[in-house]
Image (cartoon, rainbow, N blue to C red; front, side, top):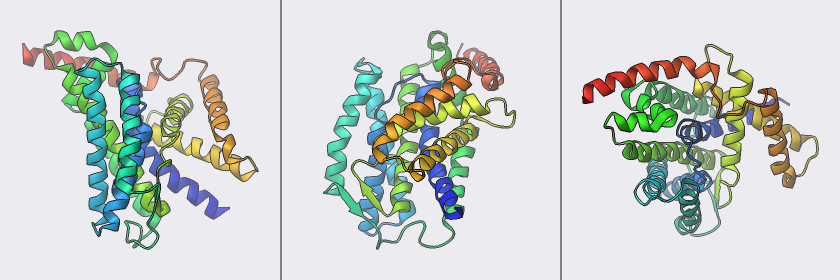
Amino acid sequence: MQEFLLGVVQQSLIFSIAVMGIYISYEILKFADLSADGSFTLGASVSAILIIKGVNPFIALIFSMLAGAIAGAITGILNVKLKIQDILSSILVMVGLYSINLRIMGRANLPLFAEYNIFSKGNILFTIIILASISVVFFTLFYKTKLGYLLKGIGDNENMIISLGINTGAIKIFAISLSNAFIALSGGILAQYQGFSDINMGTGIMIMGLASIIIGFNLFRKLNLANSSILCILGTLIYRTSIALSLKIGFNPSDLKLISSIIVIIALSLGSGKGMFKKKKILMEEKDKSISKLKKVGSENA
């Protein structure tokens, strides 16, 4: 049982990094980025092939993030510059990434069991906690920057930001790029953790992220000490635990999508039907700060 719980915690922390990235596009920008599945696999495939070629596993993770950022930037450019709808632009990138990931790996599955990785030396859980903590600290600080406030402002009222003379398109592209960078990072870490990269390992990441965000904010939003990144971790932990327990009691892997849907429905019902895109009390103070910060930005640009 202890080994079971340890595995759930480790995987939850790894996936929570992707959820933090998904939070940017879905919750802050209200951007339906379906390319998350492809970016997750992209991060895994880049990490795997570089490790096989002898690249340091930590450096491989940096390249995974870079690849994910490029994929996200393409999605953003299709939406902002070519005026393609967010869902369609992300679908186009997701479909294209499938072929790109196959091209990178050279086959559908790439084993890494004999390769040196970030978990080869030291405690696995400790390494994962460090990586997740770095992500939490990064986003906590980022959301307090001028760019972070502008990003929140675009999600709340884009026209107001445009009226300040700010290029919202460039910020959108950057945000989607940042989102996919962390999604790809999560994929790269998971590939090293499980010892292989598979072309289908990103399937369902978007649904998992959406469910984790809903669970985290609906169940733990009253925690005064919890910021958005912490809520993403808590939501992912509950979601992954529910999935793991379902498999442990005898459900088939083919039932996972149905189980995921049920989990989301329960989370929404516990949130009194408010849903994830309604105003959340835990974010009210952050939004008030965003407005005051945006006024300062406007005065600076005037």
